[in-house]
Amino acid sequence: MGLKDSLKSNVKRLDPRKIMGSFTKLRVKFSGLPRKKKITYVVIAVIILLLIGVRVNGAMSKAAAQKAAEMNRQTYTPVEALTVKKQTISSSVILTGKVQGDKEAPVMVKTPGKVAEIQAKVGDVVKKDQVLFSLDKTDAMITFSLQSAQFQMAQGAYETSMRKYENDKKALERTRELYKIGAVSKVELDQAEFLASDSQRQSIEGQFAQARAAYESASKTLADMDVKSPIDGVLTALDVSIGAMVSNTASVAKVVDMEKVFVTVSVSEKEINNIQRGQEVLVEVPSASTKVKGKIEDLSLAADNRGKYNLKTYIDNKEVSIKPGMFANVTLNTATKENVLVVPTDAVVFHKGRNVVYLVGENGAVEKEVKTGLENGMETEVISGLQEGDVVITKGQNFLSDGSQIKVVTKDGQSQEAQNK
Image (cartoon, rainbow, N blue to C red):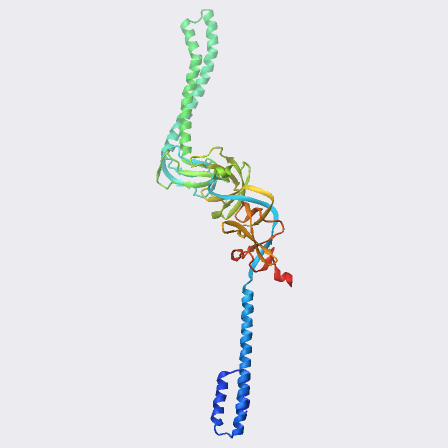
């Protein structure tokens, strides 16, 4: 390929290094050429330079046009929008409290003693009268055995004494008849009346009652060595150990009926008048990964020393997944409005001391001042400033001002590009 062809090829590809190489080779040969050829090469060089200028200028114009188009695109703010409609809005508060069992029974020993055996552990589901732990029964068993023997003897003596008493009553009747005819003395009659008297019967019964009471007391003391659950529920506390002494002055265990639990929370005087007994609430117990519905069953009529009103909400807990002592979040509605204009709370922007929203207008964003009402954190009621059917900007609004150029990419959850296609 000749020098001219090489130069033309490099001009087409606009490779500056190769073009300069071609010109260097041309300059070396140029000095030894005839005048006519020199003129030809000069003309060719001028043409090449003109072509280079045209190509470079075209490339620069194209780059400038692309940059201008990009800047033009950047003047539009992409936004998402929503058509304003009338709907129902409720405001709510979230309050925190602790879960408690509806029935909680402390467990105390009746008689002090040493722990001999433990038959349950914390967390066990127990039935009423189920043995939780046992005390040493040695002394109680000795006392019971003694009183049992004495009671059996007293029972035999009582039966014998009562038979004799009945016979003495019959004998009294005969003695009275004999006394009438002078067959017995007054002393014999008095003796017969004493043996058949009520006081004699009461004495016999009293002696037997004492023996029976002593036996029953010993029996109860022995039975009390087995410490039992007072109710059906879950054993939530057990503060005993083998060989340790326990006193009858303090609780050593606790059983809670877990099938029905409650949460107590406090509300302010501003909220109390919007809450009613029987109102449904949502109770979330994070540590149990549980959300359940409950009802307000107790509502205090007077404020406590903090100026708060206590309310108690009960929840069913048949699966016993919620434990007393867990923290719970109680969500309750404090106000509800129906058939009102509602927008997402994020759509309302505080700008220059005013609450405003931005609408989708024909020539860009339109700033509208609004008056708001009920709010629940996610949605806000608009009392004035909007009409049903207005299209309010819900994303991108924080980057707008009145008249800003916008591009709606999503409206009412639908992609506008998909609709245009």
